[in-house]
Amino acid sequence: MTLFNEAELYSGLASYMWAAYDDLTRDHDYYKRVLQANPGLALDIGCGTGRLLRSLRREGFAVEGVDIAADQLAHCRRLADAEGLSVTLYEQAMQALDLPKRYNAIIIPCGSLACVMDRRQTLETLHRLKAHLAPGGELVFNLYIEEEAKPGATYPSEWMNWTRAPMPDGKSLFVDRRLMVVDRLEQTVTEERRYRVIEGDSRDLPATQEEIRTGGYRWYTRNEALWLIELAGLTVEKITGDYTHEPFGPQHTDSMMFHVR
Image 1 (cartoon, rainbow, N blue to C red):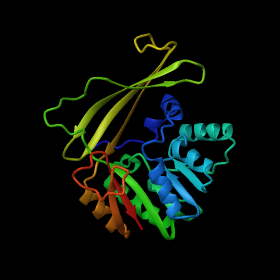
Image 2 (image 1 turned 120 degrees about the horizontal axis):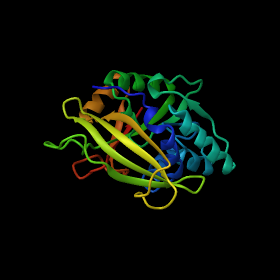
Image 3 (image 1 turned 90 degrees about the horizontal axis):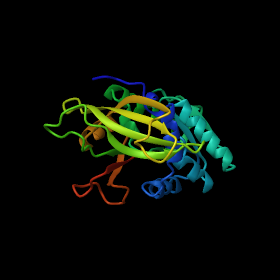
Image 4 (image 1 turned 135 degrees about the vertical axis):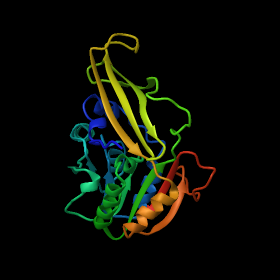
């Protein structure tokens, strides 16, 4: 298994893509309810460019952010300043989390815990999150249900059109993704993402700038995640599915939502 610097996949041109991504329909209301149920100071782990963080701050919640990628945090500050928001941000890896505060709620959106690819470091992450919870505080995170591991598939895969994002100078950022390795035994994925800046609105035009960034993630089953949580000395209160209040079950196809104290 190859380990990556998790900041690599989200720096440089990648940070411009995430700065342009502000979709809140998928998970905002779910995490908002978490903060409402645990009033006081909250922490957004892997906050990136502040998609959720800035929205929650606009609604008056006391929430701080931490991310491993300095480029992402720079965009978060820029966007927050433009909105007249004050934000408290920390540049740290979650498996090395060491902040001066304790939090009533800690959230890890977007399945970001899976970016910690070594399971021992995942356990260390959970230990550190426990240490940062205030008495009675709640940790909530999602893990995606893995669908990449298809028997018989060959790698690397073909480049797949992923998304397009506007650049501040009016150019377009086109993003493609391909899977390099899917290891069904280690339950890990290695991928490349290609970022191309184009003066125009067609991905077929020549790029004026291009970057390819490599990263990976590990996927967990429900029971594997439960074991890690229990080994960290935490207690699972409930597991829901797909950003709903329903107990996680076979009808859910996107995410397992872990509520932990």
